[in-house]
Image 1 (spheres, one colour):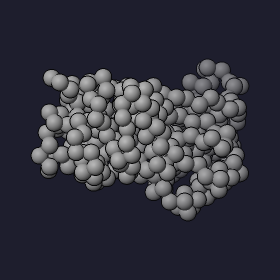
Image 2: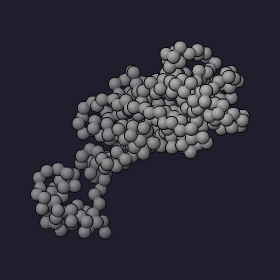
Image 3: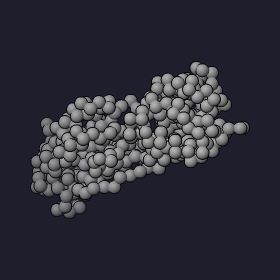
Image 4: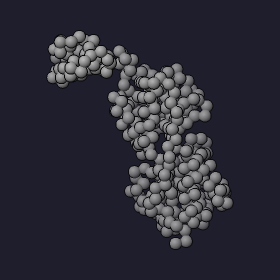
Length: 335
């Protein structure tokens, strides 16, 4: 038999309205009444109907998260943080895998609209005019994660990609390297492609080091692209001593290709990555990398959504600090 709120009210000898106020954390009852009602709820095994509660307080206790690649280790870190914050606020997470595909993103936004989610986190993708209008019409709290928009007034959570790339390049320079190449995301990628290339070039120029176009291979962020890009880079820049990879997956591709080419890391070539994925310390050798705190970033993005939901006012964007994690893939030049 299904236990209802009426059953709880009857056994606790209180009104249905009192039980409802207690369940929804609203005032209007004594501590003694609250204890009595909660005890009856436990005895009867009553579970409030989530849909019914949602109709009352106009919330579904769900947030939607749009991600471009469900298998990405970086996205996994973001989702771990998002889920932790959502759980703390008594909500669930609906994950939508867009594959960086515009029509699919539009389709998922319409699904989230039908589901009446309480808020949305838009991750690692450029916010287009079309998608912004859909989100604006939904009128739900929206936060960009590992992304930002110069066109639309949307709060974001990210690291400073340009500055982090500058730090990674400068780290190699301070280790005595002068002939440094880069494998990066595409230049057309205004979120993480061009900004990281800019940071690399700024560091080289700041230290009066030469830089040529063929010393940069803009190809993507995946493992396979790291392997392919490294072979191309070595062909174009044969006396290279160090490489800055714009993602850890790229860096791991470089390590794999270097092994196949009998190039010893770090004795003959130093490599620094970007992200500090868990797998970075499992590689051979363990990868020196620029860390962005993915779980903390995901958690903060979700917290901002809930703050907007409760306070009904804008929140400030957050720039998280990056950090160089030293392991064994970079060698000091001259030793």
